[in-house]
Image 1 (cartoon, helix red, strand yellow):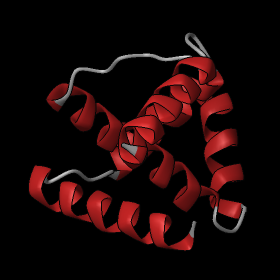
Image 2: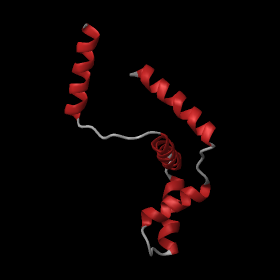
Image 3: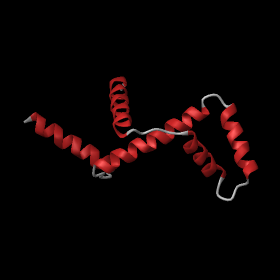
Image 4: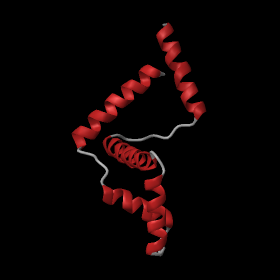
Length: 102
């Protein structure tokens, strides 16, 4: 699992660099405005903004979340995504194992 995580981080970092993906302060503010809801007062926005700034690491987590969304969006635009159930994946794995056994 550690090896897979490192591979994912390398791919993610390369895609972030290649696509020039980033998260700005404006992006973070927009996400906070989304969290407080449409039509919320400036006071409500300022309150949640203060909360995020006071909590250690919360802005970083939000930025990482937004960056991940952009990474997955970039990947989805490059590939045809096919949703599969767990059973579909298990059947495909069994079929692959049978082919390898030949």
